[in-house]
Length: 306
Image (cartoon, rainbow, N blue to C red; front, side, top):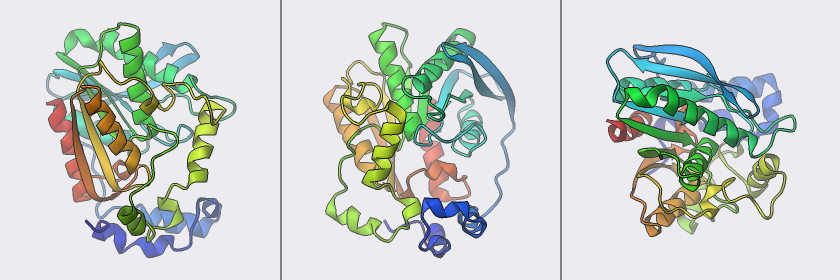
């Protein structure tokens, strides 16, 4: 499929723009205009509450989203951001959590894990996610029938790594994993030639170069070799995991990581169901359901939870 037409007609706003250019107010304004969706998002009728739980590195903030009706499922959701960006207010956290809570009638807990900045590195972000996950199971598991674990991009890597810890420590596993465009491997496998040609039309702010990926990995783990198996968990043994619902962005330099992960899970006899978000770039859950493919992506996860 071609790039989503709404996004395609706005690419001119990003022409010639690289991430360092966002220090310029005019570039930031154009980038903000590009990120504006066709209509303003209205939060569904869910109860939102900021809380925190204890973790090995200090308190871990979490935000709960509770539907008005009784919930049979609880979900821990982990935003992305290359392990060094993002927060509870970004759409990939706030919009996704609120929408899943409403659509799936589930309690969703979004976790504000420590980012890989100011000297923070692996395993601190993962430890925070695991602390929030265990808090959810302690606080909510008795009130629901199922518990699920999910995340997007780097958050998907953290969610998968948390599930691997559960397996290795013989803890109660999640009943379901929801992984959106995961950053699960280093090196990232190459795009096929046809997709690589399609991607050349995208501006630098919608791409991941080899240098970008290496920076994220080095910043998170402190090195580029001998990586811990659960840092980029596509390198880990993937047997013994719960069923996985895997969302893939079509126009994404990290797409080969998601597709390789699907093949690895299948080879490990883990049940996996994939959905290709046609015409969407990496991080498309940072937009709202005003875009039809974002709406369908949210339904893909909500249907898995129902």
